[in-house]
Image (tube, rainbow, N blue to C red; front, side):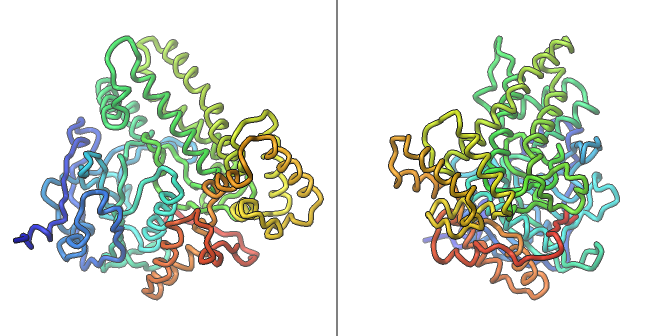
Length: 493
């Protein structure tokens, strides 16, 4: 006979490895309870992969966990301390509105942070209320799950609950809490915090923990400098991640060092958005008035951020500071080459190119320059090339585009693979749909202002298969109507 009570258990399987680090790394703290939580959305496929029982998560008891009203057995909630360069200025920070509930160990033995975002004030809140609004939490859910479907390393969203309480920003907004899942919340800013205010022993403990958790193959003892290996791996992963952003037109918006994950995942979806018309100067964030984090600047900022990580590791790289700097500089010198190699490899795939030729970058650059000149949509241009519908591009009648297209076709003819094979490569490299800004806003408006979550659910369904190129996706491929006002995003804090 089946034990009905057992089937109603969520199957949380918690460990608390981060809590075993020195006490200066965090503050143990329970979430602040909310009035009347209600489940808005649950990511059932993610729950299953985590080893959780979706049915149990939907019960009153399950929802209370997502709201912070109930602490499940084995959990040890804490707020993490970290620092960060925010728009170039160094600050002491920390989880000001989030708590790490604990780490879920999956049936496959994998470890994932379970974090509640919007769970109340912490010692790091800096006079904030520690709460979050429904719109930004749903926005993170939509964008992070879209990134996952695109195949880009990312934190994910397990659930969003409303709190039954209002929060005050410029106006009164419905409160909400997001449950975020990450391979960890270790950041460049975590290392900066310990390097600035901790001891060398604590810095070593953090680096050893990071190696054990994320890079066990590098965690070797002997003549090899494993901290150099850690630096090299973080550089490699950031170079690869940002290349993937560029290849789909994603703009993070706040590439502060506290928003750079050591694991190489995209983290902290605040004023992020996807580019429509191609322009390297594109900025959406209302607070990025100088364009520091513009689309075209993201690769360079990525290099700046890993340089800050290298600075934090200097005491571990060599006891002689001069030699430590030399070691770090040599490692950092690989970043640009790694990024460009990843980016160009991705661009070749977007154009159906299997092999490499010296003039490939010129071919890609020529296309991008034309796209900028004609304000061509980034995603739809590559989609049109993929399905061979050139008439769908605004450049179709341009002589320069015809010349470029002839060069591209000639380039394709010089490889062994067939046209069909090239198109298949392009289909797997060029998404038909992205979270169009106007579609995201449409979904949020319906959810927040009218309590209609069907628009968001439909959007999520379409975004879950971005490379399908099906007729059902056509409506979601359209660019927004022209507007005199540029699209702006906000941090949602």
